[in-house]
Length: 436
Image 1 (cartoon, one colour):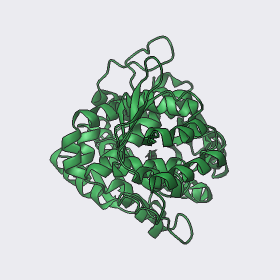
Image 2 (cartoon, rainbow, N blue to C red):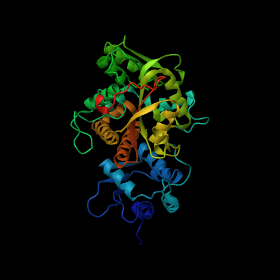
Image 3 (cartoon, rainbow, N blue to C red):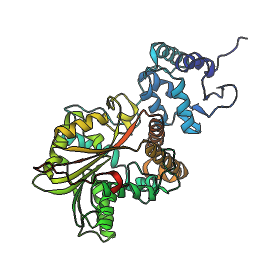
Image 4 (tube, rainbow, N blue to C red):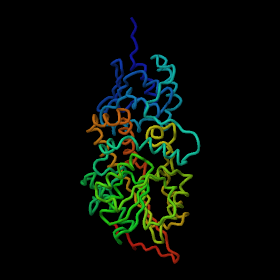
């Protein structure tokens, strides 16, 4: 009697084509067969059904693998960061796994009976939208997909600070090696980030300054500016869930006379004047074609010598979150990351004078690792709040993003700019010493 091929036997040529002759992680399949590397390895990919292969056949590359993971037909057991790093280091540069691997996947699918109609994508996936990018309606839909997941879910992952942006793990002095000081708690590190923004904007220099916080989230930056520096703050967001909770938090903190939260698009802001503007983790949703309009709008809202701080993720050369990518489908539909040089140029063209650029790349890697640890520790509660598929999306995207910040594939910068007055005066401190 001849040997009956196992699922591992069928998969072995596909893995060799996709990951090379020595995959750095283990693989276990639904029939009990397995492929394990020699020596120690960081974890195992468990392929639970042939539906996982169907996802890869119909969407080769990261989208298909993401669908398999979100649907639960693939699990990653072990150190998630090391597993992803190992896959990244052995996979070919072609994000679609290469033509050879695609043919191997089709062949494996045929042998295992996994061909046929394409499997239904998980419901957490955002379908590609038609029409012009970054209209108000389309932006509102994209923001709702990501931010209206549930305030309780975000509270669980983000912690008491309810701040969904890069923290700053730095005490009075850094660790002497240029990296973040991880001694601070996440809550303290988020407070340190908010305070840095306030000091860069000059809120410590004069009480009761009028601040606009664009993309205010759940109101944490607005509340810090008002409670610590006596600022009068207007926060705007286009997420209804965020606006509702931000108003509740402001009222509970006794700051209703100092902080106003509006459900509004930045393009609706007209006829007002502010002393300073903060934009933290919002610019990624603006888009390349709207960047000039964005900075032009903010420029008209600032008084002479008023300052703008734009805090945003960046990529060298720029990057669009494509509709065939995992992050474009599941996380940030229509998102775009600009090169920080392009951001500086757009601000200057709008009439700003750029005074400071600071990278917080290592700090965001640590922030994301902290969020992932919190999510994993409270996994059952997270699943109860948002569903298993959504929790899987957040676990995978945050871990992969942390690796991107660690290896420099992703950057994040705070760009501080000012509107000079008619005589060219900027009213800025001579050095960074004013904000530390």
